[in-house]
Length: 183
Image 1 (cartoon, rainbow, N blue to C red):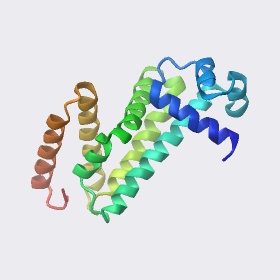
Image 2 (image 1 turned 90 degrees about the horizontal axis):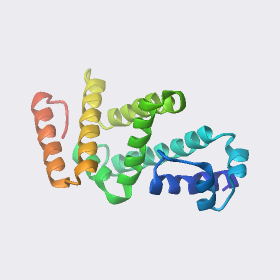
Image 3 (image 1 turned 90 degrees about the vertical axis):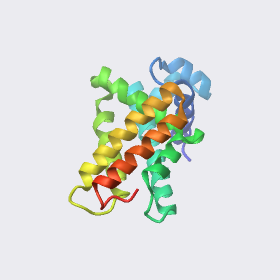
């Protein structure tokens, strides 16, 4: 592992614990055992550091989801996806990805790439878990929007039982409306 990779991973741990909204290089550097000057040396700018770290976060999350899908032999359901998302080890990554999406909406000059990159890459992951059909992309888009809404509700309220019940209800509705979709 290179020093840059080590700094990226340490910065990711910092982002997971502290978020990005108030990110300043000096406190970050101090916390991860380096200097702001060395962070700039390795990443060129604060924005590029954020890009590298968030690309790593998204990659880890998506690899973990794909691994979960393979472990269920391609039969991963929205319910297993929901269980993965709401697991305490994973929700902190999901929270960080949502924070960057909101920051991108507020400050597109700095974070705009995260909107399109995140949406398109998650759509591909969701499509991968669905059976082939003419409506596959549409169903994946709908499933992603429902998951996003329920995750925001869960993170806002902490009510896992209610949000899980809502997800299960959605899966039943979707299954009734589309026989090709396996819940």
